[in-house]
Amino acid sequence: MSKELPKLDPLFERAAKLAISNKYASASLIHRDLGTDFVESARLFDELVKAGVVTKWDKKTGSKARFTSFDDFIREYENA
Image (cartoon, rainbow, N blue to C red; front, side):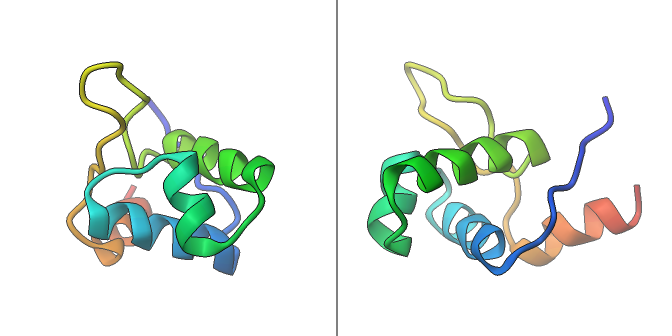
């Protein structure tokens, strides 16, 4: 499965770092911590899922981070 890396704008990078450091992500977490409006937060969450930073939302476990650091995330795409 090929992953599409979204344009690494500063907001995406901050959202990815937030998800990785918290070991999960949600639109609400992004909204609260980054101060974005909820629509932008949901868009960022969708980009995190699409890029493979976090898993898709699961009713039992939420959405878990797949990387231990942002650098690991970047390295995976540079070596792909």
